[in-house]
Length: 127
Image (tube, rainbow, N blue to C red; front, side, top):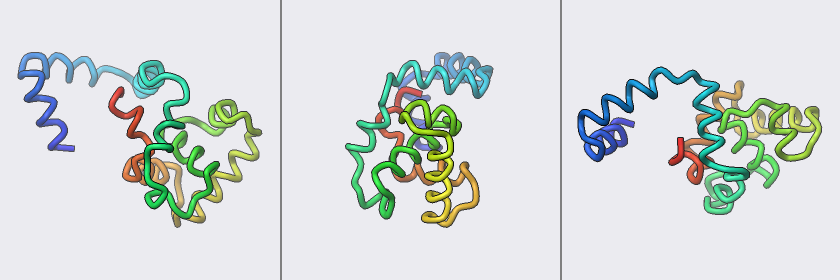
């Protein structure tokens, strides 16, 4: 994190950095997620999954990888169901499987793992 902040700060210059930081700090979580979605475009998570090594997301099925990417992006079960054209109950089952397979107890743990596994690589640079 610190290395990334330093690199961006250096690239922008101090004045632009301060302005961008102030503007970004004022954004609500909902606004940030919506901005990320609009900039990243539809289905960015699919190309992200194709670019990542299967080793980083083993032992998950392809569908579980898709659900994990969308959880990592901050989508709720209803939104994931709409995106993948599934029922909410099916998504709930996939999330439960993810928790069990990865040994986690919360969606935030899935999201943190998803970031480390590179599930947002294609969309993250747009946030």
